[in-house]
Length: 316
Image (cartoon, rainbow, N blue to C red; front, side):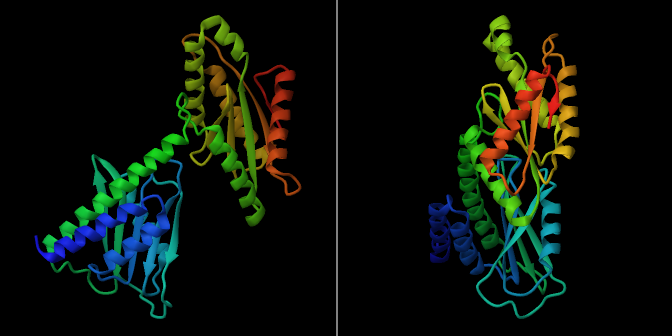
């Protein structure tokens, strides 16, 4: 094994120390790849096992390029391997971008393991992208694959700690983080969001009559119906017990009412092993005079109103 190969192995294996910090990992990975790839712009994407996670493309650019176009083309190719919902690009560079490139060649490198895309690398160059040494190139990609595999496995651990084991929904801790983040985003960008609080009607009676195993089945079925019925961008949490919270970004309470009604009817019409189950839903909406706690309390009040006025209904 020659000194160059040993050096490459040591450089890539050293990156494993940074898998818990995206930015530090990216900065070090850029430095390593810059030694072996010629590029005007280099894009790196780490996939997440969380299907609701934003798809972020991190770009290190030496020249001005149409970054929006690169982002679109890059994720068009990623979509061959996974469903792509929300995409963003983030420009990371240390030098001024003085020169502008109108057209550039692209080399897209998907990193796959056991049928799963771990991430991808995009190399963009004003001239033709040329691989001088195919054997060395393949060796570097194998080392990249090791890094991306470690990164994905770490992301899986983080994701699993955020998920409720029974329903597969995000857990209460993630809700507490998300409602603060959504509130701050609405304040900063002058946008809107709604919070839905959903409760399974007579759930204690379901457990007492049919047993906790059936109660668990009902919770899982309701969670699956919610996932299938609502938009992919609506984030769903098991708030506690049989209560489920749903954050709908950039949605007024009036606009949240329609999908909430559709969801209520879907559950009402669903056969739970030849038994009927209904839900009550309360909706609250962001306003700049409120706090995250106020919004939660308002949604709870609307849920209580739905319960008090007959259950199996939506109040906002």
